[in-house]
Amino acid sequence: MGSELKYLAVLAITLAALLHSTAAQETHVVGDKFGWLVPPGGHYAYEVWAAGHKFSIGDILEFNFTTGDQDVAKVTKQAFDSCNSTSPIELKTTGPANFTLDTIGEYYFIGTKDRHCELGQKLAINVTAHSGSPTPSPSPKPSPTPRGPVTYVVGDQFGWIVPPGGELAYSAWAYGKTFYVGDTLVFNFVNGTQDVAVVTKAAFDNCNTNSTVAVFTNSPVNIILNTTGELYFTSTYDRHCELGQKLAINVTAKSTGTATSLSSPTTPSSHAPSAQSPAAPGPYNSAPSMINGSGYFVSFLLVALSFFH
Ligand SMILES: *[C@@H]1O[C@H](CO)[C@@H](O)[C@H](O)[C@H]1NC(C)=O
Ligand SMILES: *[C@@H]1O[C@H](CO)[C@@H](O)[C@H](O)[C@H]1NC(C)=O
Ligand SMILES: *[C@@H]1O[C@H](CO)[C@@H](O)[C@H](O)[C@H]1NC(C)=O
Ligand SMILES: *[C@@H]1O[C@H](CO)[C@@H](O)[C@H](O)[C@H]1NC(C)=O
Ligand SMILES: *[C@@H]1O[C@H](CO)[C@@H](O)[C@H](O)[C@H]1NC(C)=O
Ligand SMILES: *[C@@H]1O[C@H](CO)[C@@H](O)[C@H](O)[C@H]1NC(C)=O
Ligand SMILES: *[C@@H]1O[C@H](CO)[C@@H](O)[C@H](O)[C@H]1NC(C)=O
Ligand SMILES: *[C@@H]1O[C@H](CO)[C@@H](O)[C@H](O)[C@H]1NC(C)=O
Ligand SMILES: *[C@@H]1O[C@H](CO)[C@@H](O)[C@H](O)[C@H]1NC(C)=O
Image (cartoon, rainbow, N blue to C red; front, side, top):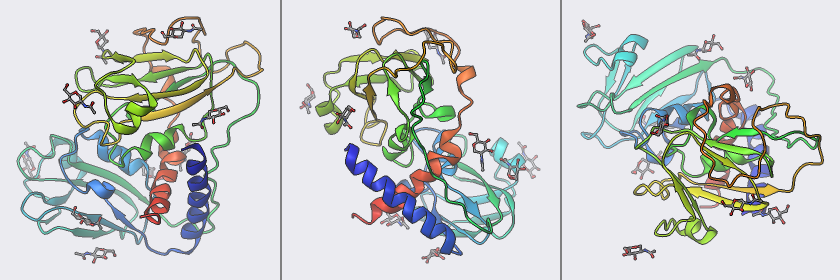
């Protein structure tokens, strides 16, 4: 998996550079293969999806849905925030439905059926001008410089959810990050809607959570990486694993760095990886790498992947 991912990464970066400099118009299929529906992860799902895309003027937004089951309305920010569908700017009831992004600024879309919007079928995007001279820089370079223990918030501000783009979302999150013994993983989620299951590689690959190494149900879950080797995380909730809520990381031996903790107040300790401190994860939420780093990367990774199918 490691080398395959690396190969894909190189391909994705190449493609990113290529597409970015040549394509005048891009079509974004909202939610990728999941399309436009009431997402299992709530409204975060389309936020994650949007964070992984760059919307430029002239691009097309394609909402893929079954006519009759869903619809899509372009609305004001106010209507978006309150899920008010009484007088949308534009309503399309036939799927798939396209919107051309012809002005710079924010666009808001909701589903108007039943309680679809309240349940998370809503999308906000920000359209920017085409950058004249593209400087492709999807370069998540692991820093070889010595460092103290780092606390990683899994999925950054999106936390631990069923990602709309499938499992590549968390692969992309982990891509380029170096996990050392002594680092900490923090899983943030809404209690009762997710859990964190530590599983074997076989269970991870097959999404079989009949037997787990450990399961944590109270957010935030802090996992101290106390041994080298591969670690596999997923969820015991029905189909969450199949839908892509899974993360594999490779923990390497401690960096030869100093013991001074520069980036986090977490004390590396000999605790089992089950230490669940209710410490507020707030201060660590400031690394939106999914927004413009690896998120952008995800979309191109998906493009790259589609060449293999
Ligand atoms: C994890 O890292 C070790 C040491 O760097 C390496 O030998 C192993 O192949 C890696 N595993 C994966 C799945 O990349
Ligand atoms: C739209 O959804 C249908 C049914 O799931 C699928 O067959 C089709 O490939 C999708 N179209 C796009 C552009 O993803
Ligand atoms: C919904 O929007 C309409 C038109 O803008 C407005 O008249 C109505 O009061 C709004 N409803 C709610 C509940 O805000
Ligand atoms: C939406 O846009 C895509 C990509 O340009 C195109 O293939 C498709 O035919 C369009 N669909 C509709 C309904 O206009
Ligand atoms: C959209 O982008 C503009 C310019 O980059 C920025 O000023 C604005 O805050 C953004 N809006 C949102 C909702 O992110
Ligand atoms: C998981 O457990 C259920 C109920 O015991 C069983 O029916 C199922 O076959 C098991 N799945 C696997 C993959 O072992
Ligand atoms: C989850 O539940 C635990 C234990 O009841 C509690 O300490 C924690 O604050 C809860 N987390 C959230 C995000 O509600
Ligand atoms: C790491 O955590 C595991 C699982 O709780 C525990 O069995 C083991 O003793 C820990 N190792 C160290 C070096 O603390
Ligand atoms: C990318 O993320 C960095 C912080 O990691 C932020 O300062 C920068 O404004 C972001 N760029 C865009 C285009 O969102």
